[in-house]
Each structure stands twice: as structure tokens, then as C-alpha cells.
Length: 204
Image (cartoon, rainbow, N blue to C red; front, side, top):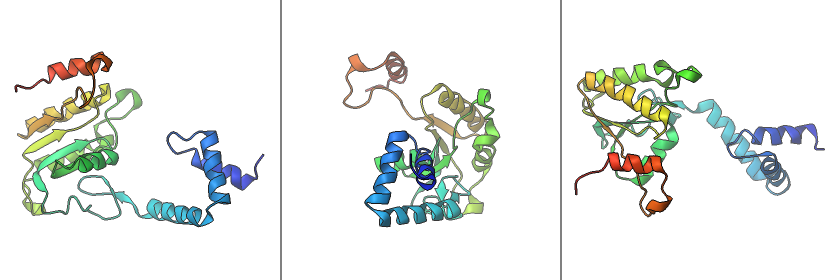
């Protein structure tokens, strides 16, 4: 139906999450018909990002620097380390604005059935990070590890695995709370979420 180059573009756009055949076709047609300047800018930016963006050597988030801006920020609390599954989780927590420590990004979770083990998500590097006394990096040793993996079966298993090893190194461990969202109505909350909320209840 379309020329080979257009078909290639549509197929390429379908790699994006949530983009099906029709959405990819609309995007391709818009870029080629309505805004070729934007298409060129998109192509250039994507090419540069693919070539230059890697992982921070300290926290493993995405950055074009050897050490990212968050890890290099002396005003952050270097005694607190928050473990998340993806760089997008870092962005979400930063946008909330009430956490001022450092991060460690797993880029996934433990999943033996899929062949994903501790080394695949950087837990060997996390162990080294927790063993540091802080002096070699001009900061302080990690005193609290905050685990913010997703509340899935795999996320919970990953959290338990990390917690056990952190406690063995003498590091205090906490887990972010999961439960009823602000503005939520109990009758619409699923049973698993309610159970977690009751188990994680706090004294007022």
C-alpha cells in the first residue's frame, strides 16, 4: 500500500509502547505531510541519544555523563539510597519532590522463570555500593536503603532479596508504603491493595 520507506517508518514507530498499526500510520503521515522539520529534529535527537546516552556508573540511571547530575549533587543526602526498577521511577519520585537522597536503578526485577538473576539487575554493584565507607567518593556511607520496587510478585521478591543482603551489611532497610491512593474510594479498591494497606497501617 505504501512505499517501502514509509512502511519501514511505520514499522519503526510501532516499537513504541502503546502504538499500534493505525497510530503508527497516523504519526508517519503527520511527520511526512505536516511537519518535516519536526521529523528531522526527532531523527537527529534520537540518533544522538542512542549514540551518547549510557548508564551512570554510580546509580545506573540514563545519562550522557559518566556520573549523573543527581549523584554529583553535593546537596543530596548521600546516606540514603532509594532502589527503583527503572529510570522513569526516578523521574516520578523527583517530581513528587519530597525525597532528597540518591538512587540505584535496577533496570528490571528478579525473574528466575525469565532467566533474570541478581547480576542481570546490578545487585552485585548494589552490594559494592552498600559496602563503601563513603570516603573514596567524598561522601558518607549508606545508612538507609529505601526499596521502591513495584508492588508486583516479582517486585516484592526483589525487595525481599535486596533487604536481606542490605541488613547483613548493617544497613537499615525500609520499603515504600503501598495501599489506598489519596482520593480513592474503598469500594473501588481491589482486594490485594486493601490487604496491603491494612498490613502496612500506621499509628495516628
